[in-house]
Each structure stands twice: as structure tokens, then as C-alpha cells.
Length: 90
Image 1: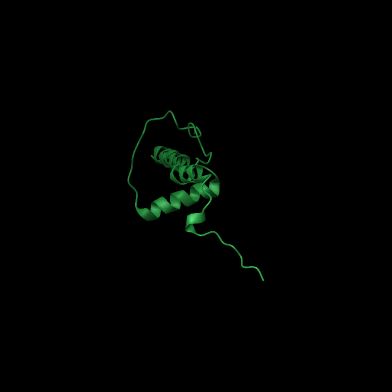
Image 2: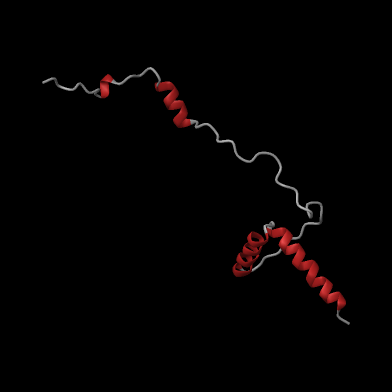
């Protein structure tokens, strides 16, 4: 019966240790989204920042997912509809 020879800590193969350490310290970047974000129809419009309650934010986000639009488009469309209704009232 032959004993299995296993590598101990001192018997490690150190040929590629530099590449292994470099890969652990500086992992290669996974290609992701680069460049400018997708343009939306309201990209050149005036900027307006509003604070909304958390439940309104969640509803707006859900509406965007359902409609397949960014939240800003859903919000701007809702504002346009609201203002049209206000202007139509005597």
C-alpha cells in the first residue's frame, strides 16, 4: 500500500502566485453599462426636484415598471394630465 503524498504549506507551487495575488487585489472589471444613460423625451427640460412620501414613491416606481417607462416620464405625464384638467375647469 502506498501512502498518498499531499502538498503541505511549504510544498506549495509558487509559480503563479503573483497573478493570483494581483487578481485578488485588483479583480478585472466586468463590462457593464458605460457611457451616457438612455435619453428620455424630457432630458432637455427644466429640472424640478420634489420630495414625495415613501408610499407615493413606491407607487410611482411600480407604475413605471408596469408601463415600461422611467419614473420621470410617468411623473411628467401625470403632471401634464393634471395641469390639462386644471386648465379645463372654469
